[in-house]
Image (tube, rainbow, N blue to C red; front, side):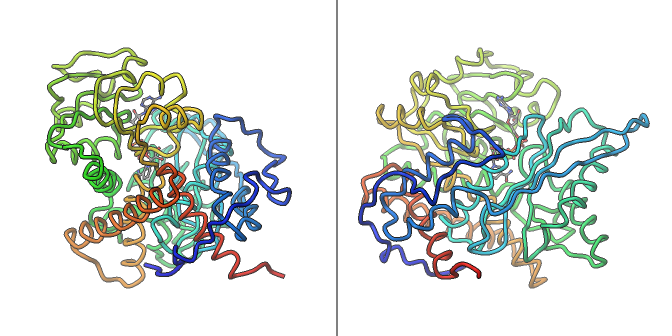
Length: 446
Ligand code: NAD
C-alpha cells in the first residue's frame, strides 16, 4: 500500500467556500440536479473546498471526469433478434494510479450515475490510501431478462468495446450491482483473447481458480462490519444489543447482516427490490439469505411481518444500513428515521438534503467512501496477488482487510474531531487532499 500524502501537512486555511471559476462543474453532456448522483457527488466535494488551502486551485480535476466512454453493445438474442444496449466506462481520475471500480448491469444505469460512482471510487481509493484512481462502468440492461448465453454475449461485447480503456495497468473493473465472479471470468477471458495472453489482473472479483482472491466475495460486507464495529466502540453502542435494519440483501447486504448477526446484533428488518420483512426479535439471516435468492426475494421469508415500502424507513432500530442503490435515503425518509447510526454500505444512498437533516437530528452517518471500501481493498489484494502469482490465505486477507479498514476509519474519525465536520466531510478532506496532492506533484502536461 502506498504510504505518503501526510495528512499533517494538509493545508487547512480557509478559501472562499465556492467552486472557483476554473472548477466550474457545468458539463454539456449531463444535467445533474441537487439530488441526482453527480449533483450529490459535487455537493460533497464542494463541502471540502474550505479545507483544501492552495490545493483548491486543482479542484477542477475532481469536478469533471478525466474521460467518459459511451459504447453501443449489440448482441444477437436467442430468438435471432439483434438488441442494442448502452454501455459506459468512466475514468474519473488516474492521478494516483490505474482506474479502479466496478461494473453495474441495471436498467436505470445512466452516464450521470456512472460518473458519480466513478467519482466516489476516486475519493474512496484515496481515503483508504490504495494506489488507484477512480473508475466505474455499466450497461443499461435488465440482466434478469436475459438468458445465460445472452448475458455472456453482452458481457463479452461490452468488454471488447471498453477494451480501449481497460488493462491491468490502466483500469481494472470489478463486480457491482448484478455482476459477479462469473461475469468477471467472461471479462477476463474476452480481454485475454483480444490481447493474445491470459491477463488475470485486468479484473478483480474473479473466481478463485482463475486468479481470484480468497475472501473477495465477502470483503465488502466484512469491511462494513469492521468499520461499524469501530464506530460502535466510539459511540458506546453495544453491538450485542444492537438492532439493525438493512435495505438491500444482495452481496453486500447479506454479508453485512451475517457479520453483524455473528457479533450478536439482531437483524430486525430487511428490504429488497420486492418488499420488506420485519421481526422485532430478529430474522434468521441464513434462512433469509437462502430465500432472498428465490423469485420474490425477502418477501418469501416465513416468520416475519411484511412492511410497506416507506414503513421500512421508520422502523425502530439502532443501526440503519442502506445496501442497495444510490438516492434511497431522501429528505422525507431522513425525517422519520429512528436509528442512531446510518452506515452507508451502498454507494451514494443519502441525498445531500437528507444528510443535513440527519446531521441536525444527531444521527451519525458513516459514509460510503469508508464504509464499503472493503471490496476494493480486497480487489487491491487480488491485483497484487495476480501480479506476483503468489496467493495469500483467507486469514491473511481478512486480517489485512481489518488492519486497513480500521486504520482508515481512525484517520477519518480523527479528522472529523480535528476539523469538527461530519465523518463524510472528514473522509472527503482526506481523499480529496491525497488526490489533489498527487495531481499537483505530477503537474500538467504539457
Ligand atoms: P447486488 O446486486 O448483489 O444486490 C443489490 C440488492 O439491492 C438486492 O437485494 C436488490 O433486491 C436490492 N435492491 C435493488 N433495488 C432496490 C430498491 N429499489 N429497493 C430496495 N432494494 C433494492 O448488489 P451489491 O453488489 O450488493 O451492491 C449493493 C450496493 O453496494 C451498491 O450501491 C454497490 O455499488 C455497493 N457496493 C458494492 C460492492 C461489491 O463489492 N459488490 C462494493 C462496494 C459497494
